[in-house]
Image (cartoon, rainbow, N blue to C red; front, top):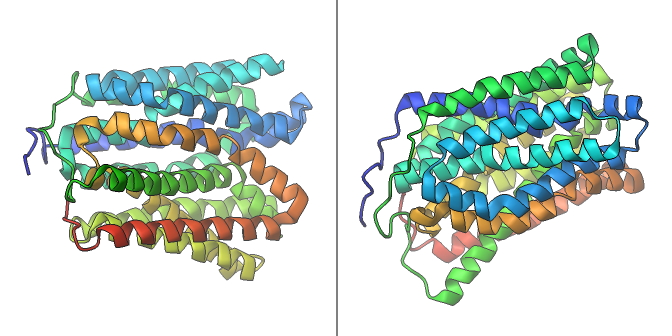
Length: 399
């Protein structure tokens, strides 16, 4: 296998800068509605569906922009794209802070959708794939270790800002944080380092039909992970309240999500490249099944609620890394952004329905019914991961 010039040459300074930027980007954009959604509803008098529909709009925009963003990073590297994403996210926060009309509110979410697609993990993974080729899995794991802390930091921080200043002033503070964090992306090189031909295929080149099956299985895994991640990030504190916990206790329990994410990602980082990517991917899928089962069985008790939140955090955190690492062993890293962007386009479009779908499921089925649905989805996710692993088990090579 050919080796790209930059493989294995991702400096620690770059990983730290990207990781810190991910903490801010996830905390200020992706988790925004879960913190300020109730306050927005109370002040603006809008329905939950309309308020959470703004986040759905942002996810749809992410899907529409996905391929173009991937091609941009393939051609130019991640520096300009990710800095632009932070700037658009900051503008979106400012627009939301000024919103009194539905059109302005949704305009803010359009900007945030573009910002998220340009600044969150998928853009960072594409940038790292071009710098490190098939050896970038470890760097992806290390960057996500930082990002896993975003909910632990920003859920209580956002709640404090909302109580102390109000949600509009808090969003202006978020905009300033995003603008400042954009400078961290100066650690990325200006252009991109081209990987050598064939880099990133850790299995033998399959015939077209087999390649299509791999894309379909990866797409199923990525879509289900994103759907669960998106719905849960918008509703996790509310789900804990629905299981019987007081608002303050629910927020405290929610912080275990971030701890679980970091713990899961530390496990992957410590494993390094000793275990194949497709084998490791089975672990988070199984953890997601276990977490929803724990919530259904004992979510009203402290051990059950803690197990649910920690296991969900660990499973989600590991699954996020796997979403970025699986393409390293299935596809050519020179085209990482384009291929993954194409797969994620329908995934983001479907995930745009997740916040509203979760809200509707809670209204119609209650919290136990909604958790039962998520358990079924996690079971389908595990089945797809098992099939993908079985297809390549004799051939998989460590990236």
